[in-house]
Image (tube, rainbow, N blue to C red; front, side):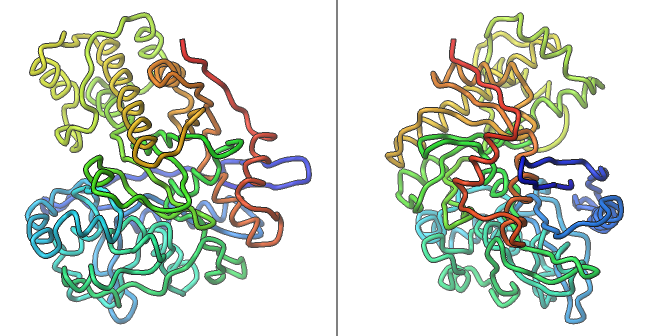
Amino acid sequence: MVGELSPTGLELTEAHRFPNRPVRVGGTLHWDVLALYQGVLDGLREAGDVDAIGIDSWAVDYGLLDADGALLGNPVHYRDDRTERVIGEVLAKIPAEQLYARTGIQFLPFNTIFQLTADPRARLAERTLLIPDLISYWLTGTAGTELTNASTTALLDPRTGHWSQEVADRVGIDLGLFPPLRKPGEHTGCHERIPVYAVGSHDTASAVAAIPAEGGNFAYISSGTWSLVGLELDAPVLTGESRAANFTNEVGIDGTIRYLRNVTGLWLLQECQREWGISDVTGLLAEAATLPRQAVIDANDPRFLPPGDMPARIAAACAETGQPVPSRPAEFTRCVLDSLADAYRQAIEDAVRLSGRSVDVVHVVGGGSRNELLCQLTADVCGRPVVAGPVEATALGNVLVQARAHGSFSGDRHIMRELLRRTQRLRTYQPR
C-alpha cells in the first residue's frame, strides 16, 4: 500500500497484492516466508518512488537465524499444534497467574513463549526475529525487535516496556536471541537509500492507531480473520480477574496499552465459504439479513481454531446445546454473525468492568467494517452506536507513524485521528 499525505488529506493506493499460502510439510504447518518476501520486493518495485517504508504483520510467529544470518527454516504457523505438548511444561515452571502478572498476555496456545519452548531449532539459533522484523532485516541488514509486536510474546513486561528476565529465566528462554527493542517511529536502516522506519509492527497496533475516535471513551474492534476487541488504556490491567477473563495487555503507539481480547473472527465464515466453494459473500449476507436470530455458538471455542470442515463443527455445537441446527449456507452465516456480535458485546462489557473505563461508541475497523449486517448486529446487542471504517486502518496507521518519523506530519495520536475523521469514509450504525 502506498500512502500519500498532502495538506488536504491522506490517500491510500494498492500497489501490489500477493497470496499468503501456508504450506504443510512433514506434518508441520509453515509460512512460506520466502514467497512473502518476494511479494514485498515486487510490491516495492510497483510502488515506485517513495519517501519511507514501514512493515507490519501478524504477531507471535518468528524466524530463526544462524550465526551467519541465514534462516534455519521456514517459520512455523501459529495454527500448527506443536505447542500442545509443552504448555503444561511451561506453566509448571511459571504458573499462569504469575506469568500474567508479569506480562499481561492472555493465554493462547500459540503464544511465542510456548512456540519457542516447543521449537528444537531455537537451541541452534543465534537470532530470533518476529515476522516484520525478519522482513526489515532482509531489507536493511540491521536487526531489531519492534516493541508492539514484542509485547505479544508473553516475554515482555508492559509496565516497563522491557523484557521480563524473570519469566525468561524460569522457562529457559535466552533473551539474547532477540535483538534490541525498537519503538514505533525509530529509523531502522535503509533499503536502496529509502529509510525504513519501525511502525506499530503488530498489525493491530497500527490499526488501533488509525481508529478515528474523538475523545477517549471508545471501544474498538479490529475485525478480520481475527477480531481484536478492547479499549485503549494508559496502563495495563494485571489483576487475577483480568487474567480469568482472558484479556491481554499489548503495547500500542505513544506509550498506550491495547487492552483487548482475541475473539475468533470472520475466520469462521471464511472457512465455511471454503467448504461450500462460495467466494462472494454478498448473496449470503443479503439472505442472512432476512432471517431471524435462531442459534449462537461460542466463537472462542477451541474446536473452531484449526482449518477444516467448519459447517460440521458449527452444526455439532448447535446440536450439543439443544439449538436449531443450521442447514443452509445463509443460516450458518446468520449463526456466525450473531455469535460474533454476542462475543463482541461480552468482550466490551468485560473490558469496561475490569478497567473502569466507560464506553460511549464502538469503532469497527478492518475488513469486517464492510460487513453491514455484522456492524448492525453489533450495534444492536451492544446498545451503542457503531462507527465503521476505515477498512484499511492497519495501512493508515502504518503510514501515519512513518510520516511522523519522516517529518512529513506532526502531532500525537489524537491529531492523527482528527486527520482520519476528516479524510476517511465512515458509516455509523445506530442500535435498533
